[in-house]
Image 1: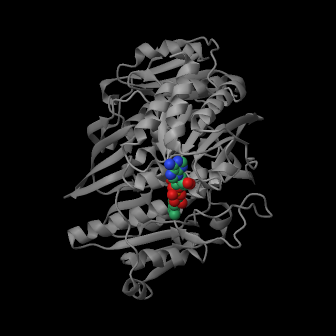
Image 2: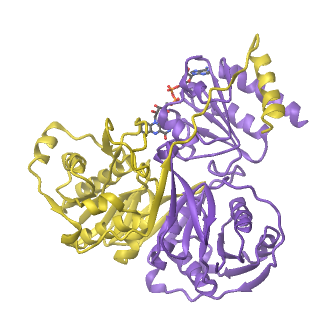
Image 3: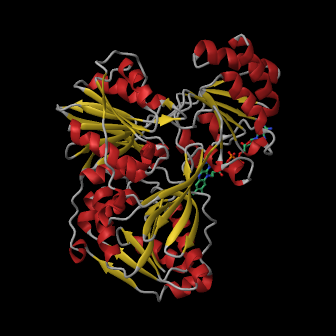
Amino acid sequence: MAGILIVAEVQKGELKKAGYEITSKAKTLGGEISVALVGSGVAGLAGNLAKYGADKIFVVDAPEYANYTTEAYVQAVAAVVAKVSPSIILIAASAQGKDFTPALAARLGVGCLSDVVDLSLEGGKIVAKRPIYAGKAYTMVECLADPQVISVRPNSFMAAEAAGAGAIENVAVTLDAAKIKAVVKSVEVAETKEPDQTEAEIIVSGGRGMKGPEEFGILRELAKALGPTATIGASRAAVDAGWIGHGYQVGQTGKTVSPNLYIACGISGAIQHLAGMGTSKVIVAINKDAEAPIFSKADFGVVDDLFKVVPALTNEVKKIKGA
Amino acid sequence: MNSVVCIKQVPDTETLIKIDGSGTGIATDGVKWVMNPYDEFAVEEALKQKEKAGAGTITIISLGPDRAIETIRTALAMGADNGIHIQDADFAAKADPYATASALAAAIKGVADVKAIWCGKQAIDDDAAQVPAILGEMLGLPVITMVVKFEAAGDKAIVTREIEGGQAVIEVPLPAIFSAQKGLNEPRYASLPGIMKAKKKPVDVKTAADLGVGAAAKTAIKNMTLPPARQAGKKIEGDDADVKAAALAKALSEEAKVI
Ligand SMILES: Cc1cc2nc3c(=O)[nH]c(=O)nc-3n(C[C@H](O)[C@H](O)[C@H](O)COP(=O)(O)OP(=O)(O)OC[C@H]3O[C@@H](n4cnc5c(N)ncnc54)[C@H](O)[C@@H]3O)c2cc1C
């Protein structure tokens, strides 16, 4: 096998955890592991990848990549692919990864498997498991030619340190400017430390039972007490009521999440909501209606008023965490 | 300006999925079919832009079996002008996102003077979110995904796209390909007169051979399974909310070990 190339993503000056997760997984598949690191001012991050098993790190560092555009990233990664000739390319299925992975595959003239949750190697070929119908079913799929281009859902694998050779090579890419037609005019990103819902390890989610926008504060308090890997989410009813932005919506027409812990507060558990969070490892439901369908999916259910349970739970979590 | 909207007919979101006898597809008996929810935003945006410009033709293109015509008619009833229905048994059996995009791209090439090509962010059946990007490669056009705001300005567009934790404003020359994200607009319902009119609007039926493409998939499904059923878990009992909260915290920390 000709080796695996991983594309690591940088956000707010840091390597995203999902990059470590796929590097760790790649390590278990065997072969040489290369990583492409594309961005502006990112060269200093290359060393971290060696700790998780990268043998070679190809750094494409230039001001042109300060703002992400699909075309520039595809050209940069394609340049690294040409150097490495990998048989497998793994990219985190983050918002950015989902945007450029299929474009990269099409540029290379090959197929692409998106948002996979498990990978195994059978005779040099990847067989990937991916959820369809928002997780109501799974397919086992394969690419018919190399390189096999695959985006991997964050939180699907554990990041584990394992030293790789860590040779760093700077790659100068001459971008084909004629193809770069989209121009980023401005970027607005909330200055929050919260992880994105798709990458969070814990999500405290609120539904119509939250009654209004201010009340999401009690969910934020609980998430804060649970630590930096926790964030908040919402059902569509809460989003459609205008209590919280669409970026928080979990479900079939929102984000698909698979945290270690999902706490559903005042959410009834409609099929479209379950579709987005059904793969959470542990599900907690807090709902005053003992008949709510969410209880049939929850590992732990509390039948009570969320406005009493959530603040009390926040206090208990603080006690456990010794804060 | 003319636009094209690529739409897909998918099972309604309430559908309980069952695997069919082949083991690589779903059983379609009793399934209620609807327009992919994200494609509704795409159709609506094309209609809004046409209304603003006061000119242009909106062509709906869908690849799918016989029944997909209903979804094309729905878009025509919303106000689109004409349709192309790509119907091909070979594609039905083995189209992956690449093969689908190749058929759509061939059909789009036959539409004159297209300025905007709209798709939904993803189809909620295969959840692949690949077709817009592949169309971009095949047609040599820029692709902007996850669009939540769109403004045409002469021969370019200023669009806002959703990015992780925020938004980015992008300027792109037309023609270009856009994928619609929730928040872009509120799709209209088809009116009764709209439904009546839609019946008379032209829909071209084309096979893969008509378009000069083959169902050359680049990925293959080996099998399909259902996730293991989740069992209802433990009810946390207690006299009041405080007691239950304490018991829950304990269970999460000691039993489930997630906090
Ligand atoms: C095409 C389509 C796509 C959709 N996509 C999504 C999606 O992506 N995500 C999504 O979530 N939904 C989606 N939906 C909507 C979905 O069908 C439900 O309407 C929605 O999930 C309901 O949200 P909810 O559970 O917050 O509200 P409700 O169903 O109204 O439930 C509110 C719950 O709060 C409880 N409650 C009220 N007050 C309290 C209190 N004080 N303490 C404790 N509990 C309380 C109630 O008992 C009730 O169970 C979609 C629907 C369609 C048709």
